[in-house]
Image (cartoon, rainbow, N blue to C red; front, side):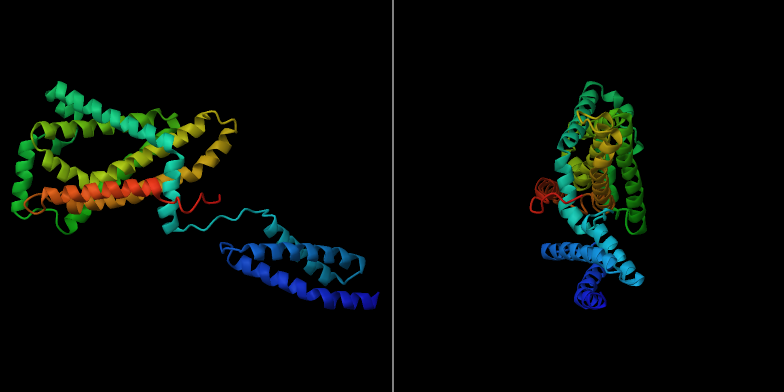
Length: 337
């Protein structure tokens, strides 16, 4: 028995040490990628050491050796069979380039519904102002929109000739104010998903009404170039951000309602959670960019910045954003949960 025990320890100890080294490497960086060959080797070592533990009990190996083997087997079992699910490391660039566009496309029905509600609001607001121009104060509840468009353009361009007043710290403060306001709208659109989507759709419809009224007001007054140069640079980013917030709210509403999914509500919410967070994160990123654009670009008009240049910037952003959401991440495949 003693000879067998000595041979057993000498012959099997290198395998225990290898398993321990491999486990320590994974435990030191649980987010590291593990190759298929390494996974197979870990599984093989786990099975061999588990068998050694059974032999150690038969050979009456001393307690400290059995305890060591038991600890190794337990650690290997937890890794090989994933008793505790290890969260994936957040990779910002991969999320932005692949996972966010994938989430947008995966929840396309909610996105189309959000865009339809917003678009319906735009048409309704424009039609209402055409039908009753005196309704401006109700359709556009902002002081700076109450001036007649021609007067507004004249005042803005006169200010530009005088050197403008949004330079330096003032532009930064204005950007911060815009960011806070837009983030509030996007988060509210998402949170109103708790109303089973009714609040989300109403908020999108309302924002669309305001935009539609503003657009018709300026176009009818012959100020289309000013309107496009003013809205496109930041609106080409800001509006999609608000729509992402609305899309997140409608995904939440769908999880609450079930929408044909027979799983428990808590399971539906857990499954929708990662996409909701991705959509909200995307809205936040776009809103930061939009706030900077509105403060440092959109508010500067002719003669400081030509309207044609600002319109071109807005159109290029629109095309780039559309391409990103349509094709981003198609090369990566759907990430593992």
